[in-house]
Length: 376
Image (cartoon, rainbow, N blue to C red; front, side, top):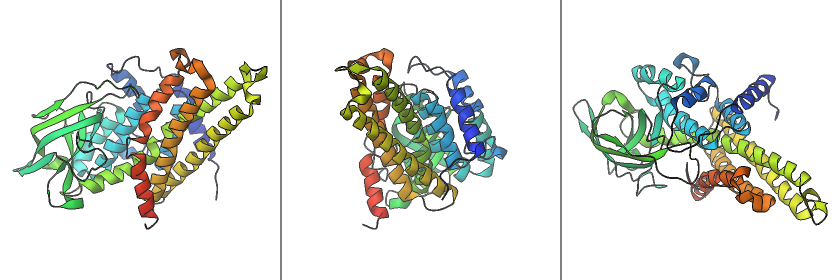
């Protein structure tokens, strides 16, 4: 069992980390800049896990996760990286794996190049974790479907050009009752709302999307009728693994900053590093980081090997998201009163980490998936 990265992976990681240091943070959640988005595309983040023939980099799950981890460790804004990850894993991957050949040809190159922004429209006001009961309906008509319903917390929603969304096509169909679609923003009957005022991940705009008898042609269906859950769960395998590499990079930065701080800061006539409770807290931060990293890399390896990654993905998502919150809070304790000052950036890291235990399936949902994987 080899735990080391190859020379190529190390080189790619270092290059991305250095490039990320040159990406300025967004100053306002109300501002979305296409030039910054295309810059992410130029670094390969918007099409990393897409074959070269469709305009991507042709990387597998592990190499894609490493890119996002490196970009985050390099200091790229967590919200901006989250926006890119939602675009790639929740939207581009479903188009790649389930769209018709002509639809892939029409959409994928522009999505990878940053010419198009994709929005993930799954969550509904009354359906967060319970994605099996979607109120949005898709009614079959000649040549396509009419969509009616409301989606909330749509990542990239206010600025997206394409929405990957899900709607009930058979209310009695259970697992096979929903269908996935890729819908153009300018489709009649589609209304994208203004950005929500969020406390974290500000650079990823999120908003409401309303469908009112919105016509979607048959060639924009992803997969076949009734395969919505399959499309969604497949995308979640990528999102719950690769996206959370962002939080590995964030933790790496926080640990490094805390190490520097406790070496320099003195209290009670000693360095903070010499105080046992502080050293213990630092050890816990490192343990959480490396444990989560091993689980996430294993989950990605299972995807790349064509195995069923469900158990490893759930464990990785749970471990990394919980670690991100705990480590951000620990950093706040280590920095003390300074953690409340915006100039130190610790409070921002806490706000960016807190949603990690909710989106892409809550921690309790991951525990249910783990229990199921254990045969309970």
